[in-house]
Length: 393
Image (tube, rainbow, N blue to C red; front, top):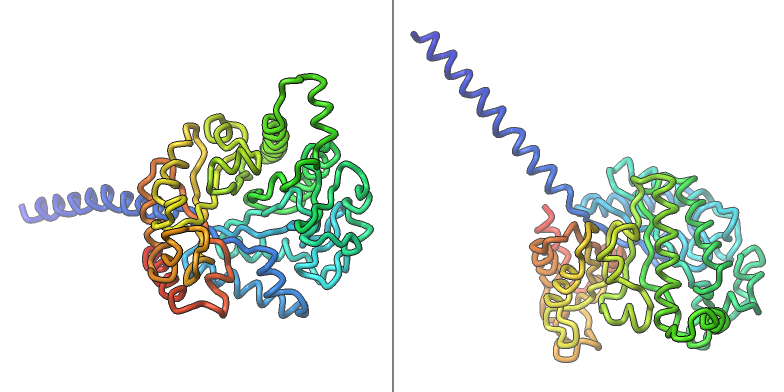
Protein backbone atom coordinates (compact mmCIF):
# COMPACT_ATOMS: atom_id res chain seq x y z
CA UNK A 1 0.00 0.00 0.00
CA UNK A 2 2.78 2.40 0.90
CA UNK A 3 4.50 1.67 -2.44
CA UNK A 4 1.25 2.40 -4.30
CA UNK A 5 0.80 5.69 -2.44
CA UNK A 6 4.41 6.59 -3.16
CA UNK A 7 3.95 5.84 -6.88
CA UNK A 8 0.76 7.88 -7.00
CA UNK A 9 2.58 10.77 -5.34
CA UNK A 10 5.36 10.62 -7.93
CA UNK A 11 2.84 10.54 -10.76
CA UNK A 12 1.04 13.52 -9.24
CA UNK A 13 4.29 15.51 -8.98
CA UNK A 14 5.20 14.67 -12.57
CA UNK A 15 1.80 15.89 -13.68
CA UNK A 16 2.36 19.15 -11.83
CA UNK A 17 5.72 19.60 -13.53
CA UNK A 18 4.18 18.85 -16.92
CA UNK A 19 1.36 21.33 -16.39
CA UNK A 20 3.09 24.25 -14.75
CA UNK A 21 6.65 24.42 -16.03
CA UNK A 22 5.67 24.85 -19.69
CA UNK A 23 3.32 27.66 -18.64
CA UNK A 24 6.09 29.44 -16.77
CA UNK A 25 8.34 29.07 -19.79
CA UNK A 26 5.56 30.35 -22.00
CA UNK A 27 5.05 33.38 -19.80
CA UNK A 28 8.77 34.09 -19.83
CA UNK A 29 8.85 33.85 -23.61
CA UNK A 30 5.87 36.22 -23.87
CA UNK A 31 7.64 38.77 -21.72
CA UNK A 32 10.66 38.78 -24.02
CA UNK A 33 8.43 39.32 -27.07
CA UNK A 34 8.12 42.99 -26.11
CA UNK A 35 10.35 45.00 -28.43
CA UNK A 36 12.56 47.28 -26.38
CA UNK A 37 14.43 49.46 -28.83
CA UNK A 38 16.91 52.30 -28.55
CA UNK A 39 17.95 54.63 -31.37
CA UNK A 40 21.66 55.08 -32.06
CA UNK A 41 21.78 58.06 -34.39
CA UNK A 42 24.54 59.69 -36.40
CA UNK A 43 24.90 62.08 -33.46
CA UNK A 44 25.87 59.20 -31.16
CA UNK A 45 28.24 57.83 -33.79
CA UNK A 46 29.88 61.24 -34.13
CA UNK A 47 30.08 61.82 -30.36
CA UNK A 48 31.27 58.35 -29.42
CA UNK A 49 33.27 57.01 -32.36
CA UNK A 50 34.66 59.72 -34.60
CA UNK A 51 38.32 60.53 -34.11
CA UNK A 52 39.15 57.30 -32.29
CA UNK A 53 41.45 54.50 -33.41
CA UNK A 54 40.05 51.15 -34.54
CA UNK A 55 40.55 49.36 -31.22
CA UNK A 56 39.05 52.22 -29.23
CA UNK A 57 36.10 52.47 -31.60
CA UNK A 58 35.37 48.77 -31.27
CA UNK A 59 35.64 48.96 -27.49
CA UNK A 60 33.21 51.86 -27.51
CA UNK A 61 30.73 49.93 -29.65
CA UNK A 62 31.04 46.99 -27.25
CA UNK A 63 30.31 49.32 -24.34
CA UNK A 64 27.31 50.88 -26.06
CA UNK A 65 25.78 47.49 -26.78
CA UNK A 66 26.53 46.27 -23.27
CA UNK A 67 24.77 49.32 -21.86
CA UNK A 68 21.73 48.64 -24.01
CA UNK A 69 21.63 44.94 -23.16
CA UNK A 70 22.17 45.43 -19.43
CA UNK A 71 19.41 48.02 -19.29
CA UNK A 72 16.90 45.64 -20.82
CA UNK A 73 16.82 46.61 -24.49
CA UNK A 74 16.63 43.90 -27.14
CA UNK A 75 16.60 45.97 -30.32
CA UNK A 76 19.05 48.52 -31.75
CA UNK A 77 17.98 51.01 -34.42
CA UNK A 78 21.32 52.06 -35.91
CA UNK A 79 21.53 54.99 -38.30
CA UNK A 80 23.62 53.59 -41.12
CA UNK A 81 22.81 56.30 -43.66
CA UNK A 82 21.84 59.76 -42.45
CA UNK A 83 23.06 61.93 -45.38
CA UNK A 84 23.39 59.99 -48.64
CA UNK A 85 26.37 58.28 -47.02
CA UNK A 86 27.27 55.03 -45.28
CA UNK A 87 28.99 53.72 -42.15
CA UNK A 88 29.86 50.57 -44.13
CA UNK A 89 31.92 50.01 -47.30
CA UNK A 90 29.45 50.87 -50.06
CA UNK A 91 29.74 50.80 -53.83
CA UNK A 92 27.00 53.45 -53.97
CA UNK A 93 27.49 55.93 -51.12
CA UNK A 94 30.61 57.57 -49.64
CA UNK A 95 31.70 57.08 -46.06
CA UNK A 96 29.82 59.14 -43.49
CA UNK A 97 31.17 62.22 -41.74
CA UNK A 98 29.61 60.82 -38.57
CA UNK A 99 32.52 58.34 -38.40
CA UNK A 100 35.27 59.87 -40.60
CA UNK A 101 36.68 63.39 -40.79
CA UNK A 102 35.77 64.08 -44.42
CA UNK A 103 33.02 62.47 -46.44
CA UNK A 104 34.54 59.75 -48.58
CA UNK A 105 37.57 59.08 -46.37
CA UNK A 106 38.47 55.43 -45.86
CA UNK A 107 36.56 53.73 -43.08
CA UNK A 108 38.77 52.29 -40.32
CA UNK A 109 36.71 49.06 -40.53
CA UNK A 110 33.22 47.91 -41.45
CA UNK A 111 31.31 49.57 -38.62
CA UNK A 112 27.92 48.11 -39.57
CA UNK A 113 29.30 44.56 -39.78
CA UNK A 114 30.92 44.95 -36.35
CA UNK A 115 27.71 46.35 -34.82
CA UNK A 116 25.69 43.44 -36.21
CA UNK A 117 28.17 40.80 -35.09
CA UNK A 118 28.38 42.12 -31.54
CA UNK A 119 24.66 42.85 -31.28
CA UNK A 120 23.73 39.32 -32.31
CA UNK A 121 26.22 37.88 -29.84
CA UNK A 122 24.24 39.70 -27.15
CA UNK A 123 20.86 38.60 -28.58
CA UNK A 124 20.08 42.13 -29.72
CA UNK A 125 18.20 42.74 -32.96
CA UNK A 126 19.79 45.30 -35.23
CA UNK A 127 17.71 47.37 -37.64
CA UNK A 128 19.48 49.51 -40.24
CA UNK A 129 18.06 53.03 -40.04
CA UNK A 130 18.06 55.01 -43.28
CA UNK A 131 17.18 58.61 -44.00
CA UNK A 132 16.07 58.35 -47.63
CA UNK A 133 16.14 61.94 -48.87
CA UNK A 134 18.46 64.08 -46.76
CA UNK A 135 21.83 64.82 -48.32
CA UNK A 136 23.15 67.50 -45.95
CA UNK A 137 22.00 69.77 -43.14
CA UNK A 138 24.29 72.40 -44.69
CA UNK A 139 23.67 74.21 -47.98
CA UNK A 140 27.41 74.19 -48.79
CA UNK A 141 27.77 71.83 -51.75
CA UNK A 142 31.55 71.65 -51.29
CA UNK A 143 30.94 69.28 -48.36
CA UNK A 144 29.53 66.70 -50.78
CA UNK A 145 32.24 64.35 -52.08
CA UNK A 146 32.55 63.68 -55.80
CA UNK A 147 31.79 59.99 -55.26
CA UNK A 148 28.45 60.84 -53.62
CA UNK A 149 25.58 60.08 -56.04
CA UNK A 150 24.10 63.45 -55.04
CA UNK A 151 27.13 65.22 -56.53
CA UNK A 152 26.28 64.20 -60.09
CA UNK A 153 22.68 65.24 -59.52
CA UNK A 154 23.49 68.78 -58.41
CA UNK A 155 21.91 71.40 -60.68
CA UNK A 156 19.28 68.88 -61.80
CA UNK A 157 15.67 68.44 -60.72
CA UNK A 158 16.68 65.41 -58.62
CA UNK A 159 18.40 67.54 -55.96
CA UNK A 160 17.41 70.82 -54.38
CA UNK A 161 19.22 73.23 -52.07
CA UNK A 162 16.70 74.60 -49.56
CA UNK A 163 17.65 77.81 -47.77
CA UNK A 164 18.17 77.38 -44.02
CA UNK A 165 17.32 73.67 -44.35
CA UNK A 166 20.05 71.90 -46.30
CA UNK A 167 20.29 69.78 -49.44
CA UNK A 168 17.72 67.12 -50.30
CA UNK A 169 16.88 64.56 -52.93
CA UNK A 170 13.64 65.12 -54.80
CA UNK A 171 11.31 62.31 -53.63
CA UNK A 172 9.38 62.39 -56.93
CA UNK A 173 12.47 61.74 -59.05
CA UNK A 174 12.50 58.22 -60.48
CA UNK A 175 16.31 58.31 -60.36
CA UNK A 176 16.17 59.05 -56.64
CA UNK A 177 13.70 56.25 -55.95
CA UNK A 178 15.90 53.79 -57.81
CA UNK A 179 18.96 55.00 -55.91
CA UNK A 180 17.29 54.48 -52.54
CA UNK A 181 16.09 51.00 -53.45
CA UNK A 182 19.54 50.09 -54.77
CA UNK A 183 21.06 51.20 -51.47
CA UNK A 184 18.62 49.10 -49.47
CA UNK A 185 19.32 46.07 -51.61
CA UNK A 186 23.04 46.54 -51.00
CA UNK A 187 22.45 46.38 -47.25
CA UNK A 188 20.11 43.40 -47.10
CA UNK A 189 22.24 41.30 -49.46
CA UNK A 190 25.53 42.01 -47.69
CA UNK A 191 24.55 42.27 -44.03
CA UNK A 192 22.59 40.12 -41.61
CA UNK A 193 20.29 42.94 -40.53
CA UNK A 194 17.03 42.17 -38.75
CA UNK A 195 15.22 45.11 -40.28
CA UNK A 196 15.26 48.25 -42.40
CA UNK A 197 13.96 51.41 -40.77
CA UNK A 198 12.87 54.80 -42.18
CA UNK A 199 12.49 57.84 -39.91
CA UNK A 200 10.13 60.82 -40.30
CA UNK A 201 12.22 62.83 -42.78
CA UNK A 202 10.15 62.26 -45.87
CA UNK A 203 9.17 65.27 -47.97
CA UNK A 204 11.38 68.28 -47.20
CA UNK A 205 9.75 71.66 -46.65
CA UNK A 206 9.74 72.93 -50.23
CA UNK A 207 6.96 73.97 -52.57
CA UNK A 208 9.04 73.47 -55.70
CA UNK A 209 11.23 70.40 -55.17
CA UNK A 210 8.98 68.17 -57.28
CA UNK A 211 7.49 70.86 -59.53
CA UNK A 212 8.48 69.19 -62.81
CA UNK A 213 7.13 65.78 -61.87
CA UNK A 214 3.88 67.21 -60.55
CA UNK A 215 3.26 69.11 -63.78
CA UNK A 216 3.80 65.90 -65.74
CA UNK A 217 1.35 64.06 -63.47
CA UNK A 218 -1.25 66.77 -64.11
CA UNK A 219 -1.12 65.95 -67.81
CA UNK A 220 -2.61 62.55 -66.96
CA UNK A 221 -4.95 63.79 -64.23
CA UNK A 222 -5.65 67.51 -64.13
CA UNK A 223 -7.64 67.20 -60.90
CA UNK A 224 -4.71 65.67 -58.98
CA UNK A 225 -3.82 67.79 -55.94
CA UNK A 226 -0.23 68.30 -54.84
CA UNK A 227 -1.02 66.47 -51.60
CA UNK A 228 -2.39 63.46 -53.47
CA UNK A 229 0.61 63.43 -55.74
CA UNK A 230 3.11 63.57 -52.91
CA UNK A 231 1.28 60.93 -50.88
CA UNK A 232 1.49 58.63 -53.91
CA UNK A 233 5.23 59.30 -54.24
CA UNK A 234 6.00 58.23 -50.67
CA UNK A 235 3.58 55.30 -50.89
CA UNK A 236 5.42 54.09 -53.99
CA UNK A 237 8.78 54.09 -52.19
CA UNK A 238 7.36 52.37 -49.10
CA UNK A 239 5.61 49.68 -51.16
CA UNK A 240 8.65 49.01 -53.35
CA UNK A 241 10.93 48.89 -50.29
CA UNK A 242 8.65 46.37 -48.58
CA UNK A 243 8.43 44.19 -51.69
CA UNK A 244 12.19 44.37 -52.28
CA UNK A 245 12.90 43.24 -48.72
CA UNK A 246 10.31 40.46 -48.64
CA UNK A 247 11.31 39.11 -52.05
CA UNK A 248 14.82 38.69 -50.71
CA UNK A 249 14.05 37.53 -47.16
CA UNK A 250 10.60 37.46 -45.55
CA UNK A 251 12.17 37.46 -42.09
CA UNK A 252 13.68 40.94 -42.48
CA UNK A 253 11.31 43.50 -41.01
CA UNK A 254 10.49 46.90 -42.46
CA UNK A 255 9.19 49.73 -40.32
CA UNK A 256 8.77 53.48 -40.39
CA UNK A 257 8.85 56.06 -37.64
CA UNK A 258 6.52 58.87 -38.72
CA UNK A 259 5.62 62.11 -37.00
CA UNK A 260 3.57 61.47 -33.87
CA UNK A 261 0.98 63.96 -35.11
CA UNK A 262 -1.12 61.96 -37.56
CA UNK A 263 -2.31 65.08 -39.42
CA UNK A 264 1.25 66.29 -39.97
CA UNK A 265 2.02 63.11 -41.88
CA UNK A 266 -0.61 64.00 -44.47
CA UNK A 267 -0.22 67.75 -44.59
CA UNK A 268 3.57 68.16 -44.26
CA UNK A 269 5.45 64.87 -44.67
CA UNK A 270 2.99 63.24 -47.08
CA UNK A 271 3.05 59.82 -45.45
CA UNK A 272 -0.17 57.84 -45.83
CA UNK A 273 -0.15 56.26 -42.38
CA UNK A 274 -3.85 55.44 -42.63
CA UNK A 275 -3.14 53.28 -45.65
CA UNK A 276 -0.14 51.60 -44.06
CA UNK A 277 -2.15 50.86 -40.92
CA UNK A 278 -5.16 49.43 -42.73
CA UNK A 279 -3.76 47.40 -45.63
CA UNK A 280 -1.03 44.79 -45.55
CA UNK A 281 2.00 44.83 -47.80
CA UNK A 282 3.59 48.14 -46.83
CA UNK A 283 5.25 47.81 -43.42
CA UNK A 284 5.66 45.29 -40.59
CA UNK A 285 5.59 47.83 -37.77
CA UNK A 286 4.88 51.47 -37.23
CA UNK A 287 6.88 53.44 -34.69
CA UNK A 288 5.20 56.85 -34.36
CA UNK A 289 7.27 59.49 -32.62
CA UNK A 290 4.83 60.13 -29.78
CA UNK A 291 7.13 62.69 -28.21
CA UNK A 292 4.52 64.19 -25.90
CA UNK A 293 3.90 64.27 -22.19
CA UNK A 294 0.65 63.55 -20.43
CA UNK A 295 0.06 67.25 -19.75
CA UNK A 296 0.82 68.43 -23.28
CA UNK A 297 -2.27 70.49 -24.06
CA UNK A 298 -1.68 70.33 -27.84
CA UNK A 299 -1.13 66.56 -28.20
CA UNK A 300 -1.58 64.74 -24.88
CA UNK A 301 0.23 61.41 -24.86
CA UNK A 302 -2.70 59.24 -23.78
CA UNK A 303 -5.18 60.34 -26.42
CA UNK A 304 -2.48 60.43 -29.11
CA UNK A 305 -1.19 56.90 -28.54
CA UNK A 306 -4.77 55.60 -28.41
CA UNK A 307 -5.46 57.30 -31.75
CA UNK A 308 -2.49 55.48 -33.25
CA UNK A 309 -3.68 52.19 -31.81
CA UNK A 310 -7.16 52.72 -33.24
CA UNK A 311 -5.66 53.60 -36.63
CA UNK A 312 -4.33 50.07 -36.97
CA UNK A 313 -6.86 47.67 -38.45
CA UNK A 314 -4.43 45.30 -40.17
CA UNK A 315 -1.82 43.02 -38.63
CA UNK A 316 1.13 45.39 -38.16
CA UNK A 317 2.71 46.12 -34.79
CA UNK A 318 2.57 49.37 -32.84
CA UNK A 319 5.93 50.28 -31.28
CA UNK A 320 5.74 53.88 -30.01
CA UNK A 321 8.94 55.92 -29.94
CA UNK A 322 9.26 57.89 -26.70
CA UNK A 323 11.10 61.15 -26.03
CA UNK A 324 13.66 60.42 -23.34
CA UNK A 325 15.63 63.41 -24.64
CA UNK A 326 12.95 65.69 -23.18
CA UNK A 327 13.45 64.50 -19.60
CA UNK A 328 14.58 67.28 -17.33
CA UNK A 329 13.93 69.92 -20.00
CA UNK A 330 11.33 72.52 -20.87
CA UNK A 331 8.89 71.45 -23.59
CA UNK A 332 8.28 74.68 -25.47
CA UNK A 333 5.56 73.23 -27.70
CA UNK A 334 3.43 71.71 -24.94
CA UNK A 335 1.73 74.97 -23.85
CA UNK A 336 0.26 74.24 -20.39
CA UNK A 337 2.53 71.20 -20.10
CA UNK A 338 5.70 73.20 -20.69
CA UNK A 339 7.29 72.19 -17.36
CA UNK A 340 6.01 68.62 -17.13
CA UNK A 341 9.31 66.98 -18.06
CA UNK A 342 11.06 69.01 -15.34
CA UNK A 343 8.50 68.43 -12.61
CA UNK A 344 7.98 64.67 -13.04
CA UNK A 345 10.48 61.84 -13.23
CA UNK A 346 8.32 58.86 -14.20
CA UNK A 347 6.79 59.99 -17.49
CA UNK A 348 8.52 57.47 -19.78
CA UNK A 349 7.77 54.53 -17.47
CA UNK A 350 4.11 55.56 -17.27
CA UNK A 351 3.95 55.89 -21.06
CA UNK A 352 5.30 52.36 -21.49
CA UNK A 353 2.87 50.95 -18.95
CA UNK A 354 -0.11 52.70 -20.54
CA UNK A 355 0.95 51.59 -24.03
CA UNK A 356 1.16 47.97 -22.87
CA UNK A 357 -2.61 47.99 -22.40
CA UNK A 358 -3.26 48.73 -26.09
CA UNK A 359 -4.43 45.98 -28.43
CA UNK A 360 -1.78 46.52 -31.14
CA UNK A 361 1.14 47.23 -28.82
CA UNK A 362 4.30 45.23 -29.48
CA UNK A 363 6.96 47.27 -27.69
CA UNK A 364 8.52 50.71 -27.38
CA UNK A 365 11.58 52.62 -28.55
CA UNK A 366 13.66 55.28 -26.80
CA UNK A 367 15.03 58.27 -28.65
CA UNK A 368 17.95 58.32 -28.24
CA UNK A 369 21.03 56.53 -26.79
CA UNK A 370 22.97 59.55 -25.49
CA UNK A 371 19.92 60.96 -23.72
CA UNK A 372 19.83 57.75 -21.68
CA UNK A 373 23.50 56.77 -21.39
CA UNK A 374 25.33 60.05 -21.99
CA UNK A 375 27.27 62.04 -19.42
CA UNK A 376 24.91 65.02 -19.23
CA UNK A 377 21.88 63.54 -17.51
CA UNK A 378 20.01 65.90 -15.20
CA UNK A 379 18.81 64.69 -11.81
CA UNK A 380 15.35 64.31 -13.29
CA UNK A 381 16.69 62.32 -16.24
CA UNK A 382 18.58 60.03 -13.90
CA UNK A 383 15.41 59.28 -11.94
CA UNK A 384 13.47 58.78 -15.18
CA UNK A 385 16.12 56.27 -16.19
CA UNK A 386 15.82 54.39 -12.90
CA UNK A 387 12.02 54.33 -13.07
CA UNK A 388 12.12 52.99 -16.62
CA UNK A 389 14.62 50.30 -15.71
CA UNK A 390 12.46 49.19 -12.80
CA UNK A 391 9.57 48.25 -15.08
CA UNK A 392 11.93 46.32 -17.39
CA UNK A 393 13.53 44.23 -14.67
